[in-house]
Image (cartoon, rainbow, N blue to C red; front, side, top):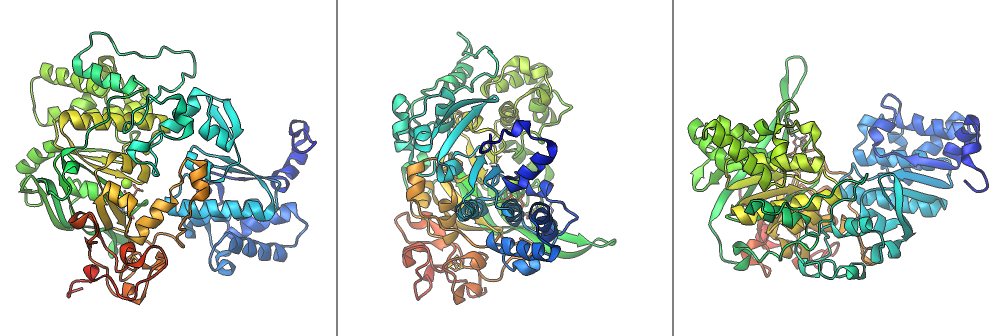
Length: 618
Ligand SMILES: Nc1ncnc2c1ncn2[C@@H]1O[C@H](COP(=O)(O)OP(=O)(O)OP(=O)(O)O)[C@@H](O)[C@H]1O
Ligand code: SF4
Ligand SMILES: [Mg+2]
């Protein structure tokens, strides 16, 4: 029912009137829902002419006004551009402009921010809220992101397997959920605003006070049909039983003690990996002759070290160079410059045979579990491939090892003969993990290992990675764009922006006392799945989009979007140097005006921070 009209009884023509006039929709992916061959202005004007009695001229004028209203700079000119000339965030704004063009009573927004980076997501949520208030529309927001819900919703409907499992006011759902699926959904989220110790301390968790801190609670997803819930097999092999038990037991295992590296802050451990001045530039080739006409500065002079047994988190928005860093470190991509030292061995200078030996110790888990497994290979061959390549063991020994690995990651030996398409996303990621473990590596680069997975599966995979780290003494570089996941998994975190590391520190310190304005903005942009916290929070909304790495700004790469930028900032990129704060040498920032000296966001010190002064050569 829409008002007193039953929509199901309306004719096609009447329904067409309803769409656009009374109900409008913002789609998940603006690229596929905007017409690529029509100018943005055309598309908005068309919607206006269809539903309102306006001439073409007036419709175009309104279109420009709407674009301006949703925050597109230079709207008068931009109406004449095509969708491909807009960035992802701008396309989403254009979609919103089109949806509100006829002042609908109800606006349905289908995952409007899913494809966007956090800082852009924050801008879009802002626009939707503003439009809702200005036009007094009701908004139905469809999303899997509980943080976004906590931020803007008044009422929530939780769906599972095509049914509504719970419906209620925002506070009721978040603080007093009744359905086990809702508990699971809320409980399996690592949260930015909680330290491990206080996790699950909000009233909603009262029903499960036995949950330990530290580990993410894993609840088996509810079966869509009545299926058998797997149980750990009695008498199964030790490690398998332990891993399985850890994954199935909703109480999880005892919290992990602080690892060696974190236990003695200030005491430098042995570095397993040292990266200095790493650069990876991709040539841009154009024309028939494929002449190089420019460079993409994907990774532009970054340095970091990873100590034995620790997890270094690498965060930043899409395209900032995280994956490229991971691949360059393993020499899957040839670095443009820099040194990489692994266990004292210069990786860049390693011969082919030496490199083959090094590859055993350094492995990678890829970003996309769907694309990274060869669909034509059986799981047995995927997991055992590297054993084969490195000529390790006899056929029988290799088979035994593959079975062992499958059990380690919580799969069973029957899975060995199957093909990747027979597995779910979470299971595929386990296969990817088993493959990475095959050669007993020391370092694993985990490139967004959980980004493609559902929230409830994410917790399982994260827990598995942590268990394996403890059992096998692994060292991880954990790449992610989700700051909450990184906070949960990492001992130290490096924040990347446009091919550079702008801040690096122990995870607790970085989240507690961010120094770089970009880190501050990133942290403030992540929606927190807690309505009370969300209501009280002040967000830093960055203006503009992430610049192209093919044409990075001069001086500090962040200056065009930085709320603290000064004249000094446009001269040279500040060097990464110690903030001199509580964490000492371990906390480094690349900024002339870090928060410690300026007191945060907009206030500005008169003198630039001496530590960040560019070297004389810069
Ligand atoms: N083979 C390539 N040729 C040209 N440019 C590339 C290539 N690989 C990556 N790039 C560019 O380098 C930049 C960094 O890419 P990278 O994949 O490292 O980003 P990322 O931080 O991993 O992003 P995401 O979060 O989206 O995975 C991007 O601008 C990308 O377009
Ligand atoms: S150096 Fe200047 S522009 Fe760069 S982050 Fe710091 S204050 Fe902002
Ligand atoms: Mg990537």
